[in-house]
Image 1 (cartoon, rainbow, N blue to C red):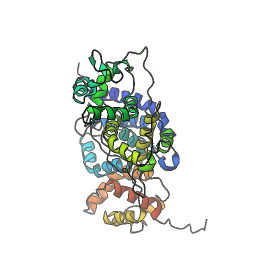
Image 2 (image 1 turned 45 degrees about the horizontal axis):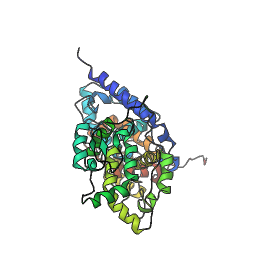
Image 3 (image 1 turned 90 degrees about the horizontal axis):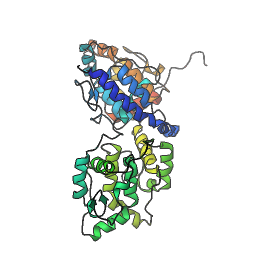
Image 4 (image 1 turned 120 degrees about the vertical axis):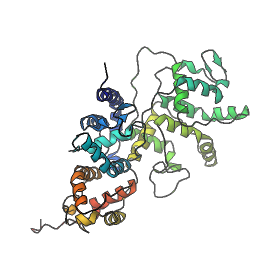
Length: 406
């Protein structure tokens, strides 16, 4: 019997929703800086209901006429994802017309929910390959000190006593906590500190977990609590070196602006790669190496990941230049007073970036027609350009005064 690819995708996305079901703590993020983050569980349902799954797969489940969004990094912030959707709108509209799919309309918080779902697709790990991990266990010299099964040394603890359902971030926390002792031992043995690239951290952890101790029942795994993670970021001294979209440079890279590739475990591998340099900087500054207990590293990652979602803050003056330069003023007037298109200053002032972007998407088909009538091309927007434009539309336009004086 032939499997319906859409039903198969729904099943795959259901498993994603189960994973996102553990994301409730992420919504405890402070609303001042991190507000506007949608509901990824609702976004998963919308991905199916709005027929996105007809063209886009998620890690192999779904359509094949457009990129697999579970394996393609479509954006590292709300602005990046929304800008990508906007810039590809003409092509998507044409493909939807070919498939006789109506252009999806979003209401309430639906657009924010969908974007939050897409943003989080890269947070959760794909399964690593324990066979590759076994090779890495030898190549990275882990076998010199740690025993797995019948193979390995005894200088460090045996790794096959770790429960199989231990999360990758718990393993990463243990790796970090024992970093000083491990680095010293590695150097004393005349070896180089191992570095992890690509999916190597996923594969190594998969190998360790495959030999772990079985537990009687699976344990609930939370992806972390962003509100607690913000406290961890301060308490562990991370903010002393690393800004998050800061105005001033720090000793370490700005974690809001630096490129973080891959899933959360791959990012943990990158964190380990920089361990020797971070250790040297902390020693020079007289700082003690922070230790992570329980779910603290999960919470820290959740905070950084959610904070990155907001992206670079927009600038209203730069947004005015985008409004003019991209031709928005041709239809909407230099000051948003309206011409061919509606008066935006009566609509967008005070609206959230999510609501403005949702309105832009909903009216995209009508804008396609109007641009065709005026022989104008579709405006392409980058992430920072969209951030500036949204800031201008929300705060830079002056609404028309009420003649009644109210």
